[in-house]
Length: 119
Image 1 (tube, one colour):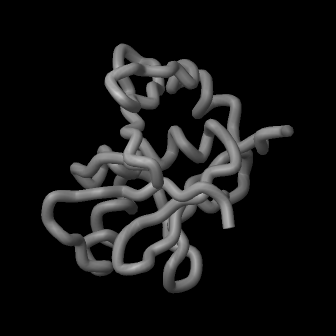
Image 2: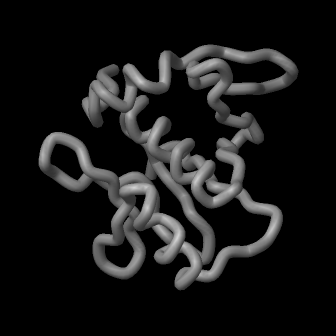
Image 3: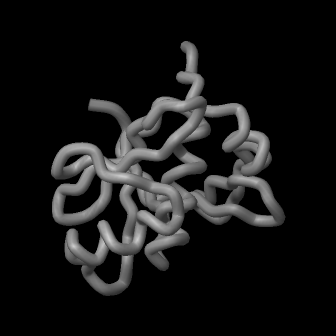
């Protein structure tokens, strides 16, 4: 199991509401619990439903997609350690302990696709 990012909303979200909200934004469902986004003719996992949405990103693209999903749902993207992921001025940032670390330009990351991180 990798590092989890959670889509956090002030009000709970039912699965039926989730399914209805994500389709117009280009997300889809695979099986009964997986949220996917398309790239390069394929569908790639972004998050899974466990009564709430959880993602275990393996690429910056998946982080960017989780941010898109969070925005569609009116939610925040929060890491296991309490850090908050956000887009500011077109750049993905991780906010932790009062400081921000840039991940990269949102549009460029989305365009690049789901290439996995390498050690």
